[in-house]
Every structure is written in structure tokens, then in C-alpha cells.
Amino acid sequence: MPGLEQRGCARVAPLVHLVEAEGAFQLFLELRRMLEDDGYPVVTFSSVEALLDRPPDAASGCIVLGVETLGPEGLDLQALVASKSDLPVILVTSSTTARDVVRAMKQGAADFFCKPFDERAILTAVDKAVSGHRLKAQSRKLREGFEHRRASLTAREREVYELLALGASNQVMCESLGLAERTLKHHRSRVMEKLGVRSIVQLVRAIEGRG
Image 1 (cartoon, rainbow, N blue to C red):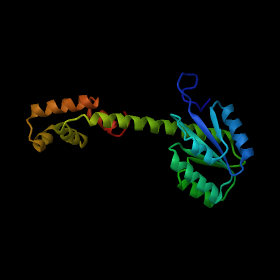
Image 2: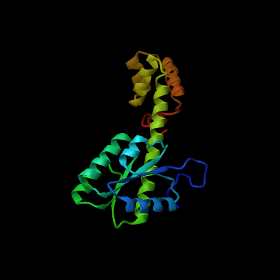
Image 3: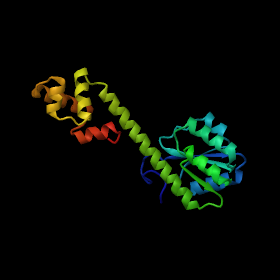
Image 4: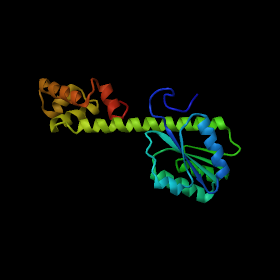
């Protein structure tokens, strides 16, 4: 069954923030039943304002925003939610136009559904949004850790690091920095040790936030 992170394991499950807006009560009930039946923990909000009063703090998850009619007001609500949270927003509505759908996607909606909708398609979209948010959070954490380690480099080590990141050879680095090869190798070893990497490939991955 798709949906939860590592279902059956001890990891914290992603949380779906289900928001009813613009009188979408019946839609709201259907979505909650569907998500809970699929095993997702769901926290509900009776309005966008209620969601913003309690900012999402889940390690991973998404927001499912139900609006009776998308239209300008619904799109403004989507934009407001997106400006206050980095959780992906999935829009579900009973009525809309092609123009509003285009605007919703341009505003960053993770996905969009209009009734009558395919339950499995919505659940698949939630799975995808949750997974994407989790990977984004992991990448951000890796980058923050790398930046913390990079800050520990000395001025000379930062010079060596910058040339390493550009893919410079030992000869080029020696000439650029005016260092003997033995001295360069010492600094290079210290840089790799402090950054927690063993190869240039690992260094590039760390710079990109991929571990």
C-alpha cells in the first residue's frame, strides 16, 4: 500500500494537512475518509486561516486544499498557503476553468483535481508530494551540515576547496596557490577530512546536497 514513509516501521509518518475552504464541506469529508482509509494520519482545518494560525511542523507531508470553486478567491488562498509553508499543496475542487487550472499550476500547485475524481489518482499524488517533500528536506539538511563543516576550513583550505570544486588538477592548484605539491596534498587531505568526503565525486555530491 503506497502512502506512508516506511509503513510498518518506527519512522514518523508524514502528515496530511487537510484544509476546507470556501464551503467545501462535502468534499472535505470525502477527502478525509479517502486519506485515512489509505493509512495517512490527517489533521484537519476548517479554514485557511486556521491552518495559518497553526503552521505545519511535520518533518514531511503535504497540504490538501479543498475549495468548492477554484476561481480567483480559491487561487488567492492557494498562493497564501504556499507563501507560509514549504509543504507541497494539492488542490481539489468541485468546479473550475482551464484558465484557473493553468494559474494554479503556475503558482506551484503540486497537483490538481476536479470532481468527479479518481481516488487512486489523488492518493498517488499525495504519495508523490510527500516523497518529494521528504527528499527536499533531506537535501536541505545535508546542505546545512556541509555548510557547517565548510565553515571550519581555514583561509588556505577554502582556497584549495574552491579549486577542488572547480575540478582543478594538483598541478593547476600548485601553480595558482604557489604551493609545493607536498604542501598542497596536506591541505587537500585536511579539506577532504573536514568536509567528510573521500573523493571528488563525493565532494560534488555534498555540494549539491546529495550526501
